[in-house]
Structure formats: structure tokens, C-alpha cells
Image (cartoon, rainbow over all chains, first blue to last red; front, side, top):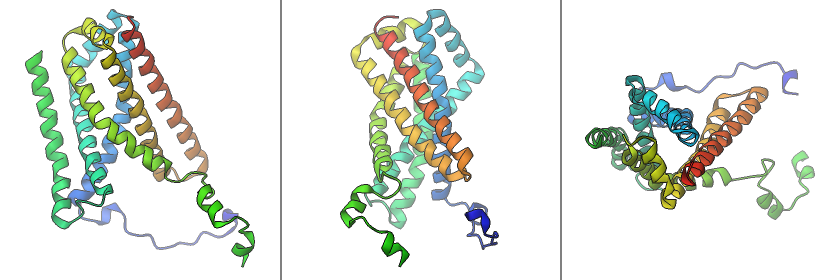
Length: 132
Length: 131
């Protein structure tokens, strides 16, 4: 039915590239990107757990791969994505209640995401190197 | 006029039926419920990783042998895949405009989430019960 009508060229509303990047907008985009990255990253978690359930040898192989330079780089990114999505999620939960929508509160909550996620990521990795 | 003639349901039916989509705020609510659950569970997961770090297989098996840790990890995985399944569905619905590919992606999303979730659950249970 929709195909029978000729396509009308309608004006499009301005999209992302039109706007100057704002903190809110950047954090929103990063929230989606980190969410998608974590989605794919569950394969690492699954591989880690399945290797553990398979045999100690298989587990050692996966741990070796994750402990390599590339593995650590991926895990570092995974840690950051996890915290970024978590703090960003808390921000959205606060906004869901209708709080923190004012000009100042909104900006503060927004900036908490990159600052908090980087701080927590560094904290966890420092702890990891201290423990090890 | 056409709209008036077609409407044979009562307002109550309309509210309960939630329209042609057959569901209303179910995903919205479940996404927030799993998000709230994920906050403590993610912290628990990070603690487990730090706790077992460098201990190899024995450390992970010993930790998951504790029912509390096993339950925490099971909850982490289950709420995680529930959350990511809905999240990815939103992304697919935003970017896949044609019905065919959209349904294909939605099906793949469901399969992926359930497969990853089940694999992790079986692995956790096996480790917990003594692999």
C-alpha cells in the first residue's frame, strides 16, 4: 500500500552533524556505544566461565589470552565501558524521577559520568595490580 | 468517521489491551528494574574478579563453590542478559528501518542473549557444584 504512492521528498529535521556537541549529547551517545560494547563483551565473560567449567587447562588458556597486552587493553576498555554505562544509567534513573533536570543539576550529573567512570576504572585497575 | 465506525471496543478494553502492540510499558519497566539490580551485582562481579585475580582456576572454583557467590553471579548474568536484550532491541528498532532485516536482527538478538545467558548459567552452576 505504501509503495503505491510516489515518494515525496519531505524536509528532514536536522540531525546530529548539525549540532555543536554538547556534554549531554556526547554522554548519551557514549551510553549507547558502551551498552552495545558491553553486549558484545559478554562473549568474553561467557568464554571465561565456560573455559572454567570445561577444564583447568582451558581456563588457563583463556586467562593467558586475557592477561596478554591486547587482552588487558580490551579488559581495560571493558571496565571503563561497564562503569560509564553504570553511572550513566544511574543518571537516567535519577532523571526518570524528574530530579536533576535543572540547568546546573543536569550539567553536574552529566559530567559525573566521564569523571566517575575514569576514576572507578583507574581505582579497580590499581587495586588489581596491587593485589596481584 | 471511519475511525468511529471501526472502534467497537470500549475505552476500558483499549486501556487493558494496550493497543495493537499488545504490550505497553513492560520493556520500559523491566529495563529499569534490571538496571537497578545491575548496580550492586556489577560491583559484586568486579569484587569477584579482583578476589580471584591471579588465583587461576582453583580460586574461581573455590569462590563459586560458595552458594552466595554463585547466586550473585547467576543474578548478575541473568539480569545482565535481560537488560542487554531490551537495550539492543531499542538500537535495532532505531536503525533497522526495513521490516525484513529488522525482524532478522531482532531474532538474532534474542538468540544471542539467551545463548550467552544460558552458557554462563550452566558454567556457573557446574563450577559451583564442583566441575
